[in-house]
Structure formats: C-alpha cells, structure tokens
Length: 218
Ligand code: MD3
Ligand code: FE
Image (cartoon, rainbow, N blue to C red; front, side, top):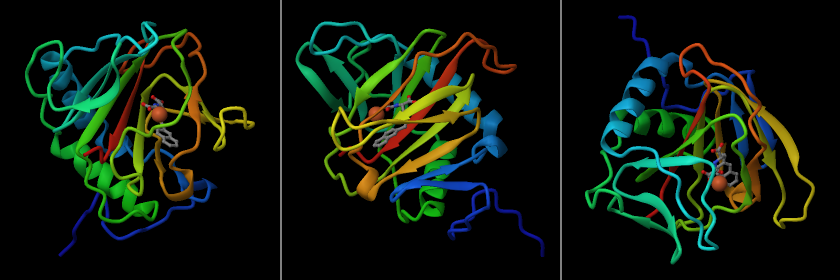
C-alpha cells in the first residue's frame, strides 16, 4: 500500500533546511502543502477573535495586529505581558487550536530536532506595510526548554535574529510565504524582531503578512 504523509513524524531533514545557529532551523516552504487549510483556519479564528492592536505596558499601541488560538493566548496591557485563557475583548475562551495548526507545529519541531512538541498557544500576528516588531525576547512561557515554531504567510518580511543581549549584532533573515522556523535550546532566548514591512502584494493574502507562533506557554 502506498501511504502519503505530508508531515512525517520522524525527523527527515531536507537539503532546504537551514540551521541558523544551534537551536534555530529554517524549513523553507514547509507550510506550503497545507496552505489552504491553514488560511481557512485563520479566517475562522479571526471571525471569533478579531485581530486587535494591543497596548504595551509602556502605553504604546502595537503596530502588529494580534489574535490567538488554543487554551492560552498572549496578551499585553498597561499591567504587563502574560498568557490568559480568556480573550479580554470578548470575555470568552480563545478559539480552539485547529488540528492542522497543532500537526504542522509538531512536525516542524520534530524535523528541527525537538520531538514531542505539543503547543498550547498560537499567537497570530498580522503585519501591513510599515508594520514592525522591535527587538525583544520571548520569556513569558513557563518552560523555556520548549521550542517556539513560527510560520510565515503572505508578503515577505526580514527577520532580525540577534544575540543574548539587546545590543548584540543582529543578522537579517528573509522569510517568505510558507517558511517555517523552529527556535529552541540555546536559541530560545535570543533577541529577535521584524523590520518594517515593505509595500508588497501577495496573491492569496493581499497586502499583508500573517505569522503564526506556536508555543508551550503553560
Ligand atoms: C527566536 N514574532 O510573536 S516569529 C513574536 O514574525 C515574534 O511575527 C515574529 O517574535 C513574527 O514574539 C517572529 C520568529 C520567532 C519567534 C520566537 C522566537 C523567533 C524567535 C523566540 C526565540 C528566538
Ligand atoms: Fe518573539
């Protein structure tokens, strides 16, 4: 019998995989096979929990639009950054994590060398031309030995990958529609960000970029 497995469970590195440094692997085009189910799932989530511009603890409106799926969602307000089971705009739980999300994240993590990754949070970031994300660390998750998996969709972006201190020199990594990156181990606490997006157009997503970040938050 012939079986087709879009996301093989066993690590099966392709020659397109790029190791950026210990713990950081780019899987070019890894999300393309499930492009349509992913985009449909994002539409369903955004209909229940619309993208919104959160306020930083310092009082600034984030230029990135955000929503979440899964048992926990990342939120920011004047009180700080945290994960919460409830969408503060609706008072309801965040939309469920679609199977296609969980399976893609687990398969990408396994291929990058992080087996057994089961995310409980998916932060969905929406960028328009001009939108940026300043250098930061992701450290609100309980278990920092768990990786983060990111999926880029829509117009391209330049990702900034820095060091363990904000002032360390950052390398620039172009990320295109369908690219997946897994970050863990010694890369987990590296500073990172996204340069302001250039005006561009994507045939399916229009003038926007959507990034999914899968986390084990709780
Ligand atoms: C490297 N998002 O949501 S994803 C974020 O493209 C975030 O929307 C960016 O940074 C985006 O927090 C970048 C890539 C990423 C995510 C987490 C990381 C890179 C990381 C954690 C540690 C090191
Ligand atoms: Fe981040």
